[in-house]
Length: 199
Image (cartoon, rainbow, N blue to C red; front, side, top):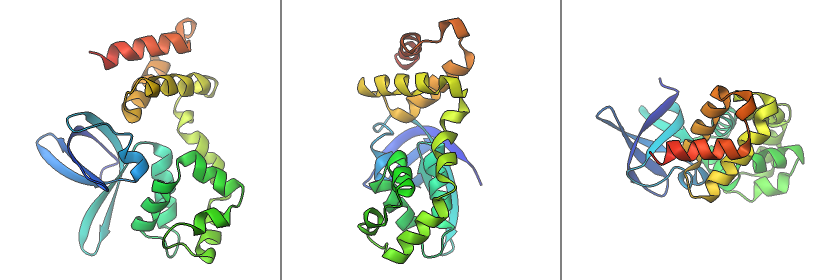
């Protein structure tokens, strides 16, 4: 199928978003964390996607970051974990919080979520033990590692100003990969990003 989608938000519900792209409308299921970050009706959005065939029906799942998508794909490969539970986990944990939970082997925190008993929580933690660090740094790895702090600081500042996180990430990543090294500062990144965002 397809790995990402870019388009205009037509409608948002408590669990999904409807996106129009090239004259087609797609209903995409998201975690609550993703839904709060994608902007409002009428905004352009970019989402990474996973398409699954369930009960003879295709369903699209969307994610604002590569890391969130990776966690979802790993979760649904664990016996007893379906898309609904996987989205429930991603709705209750940010990526960093989930990875912190894995690294601390925090079974109790996972078992607070609906549909997750102690054995399932232990299985999840076991499956993710070796993958946690790779997932944590994969997104920042899309830019040079030495620029990761610039990436994070610029995004945080732009989020505070009220700009949607997924759009900000794309712009800052592109700027980091294309700006000259002598111009690479947090201040310059924010200034250039604001020019693009306010066009």
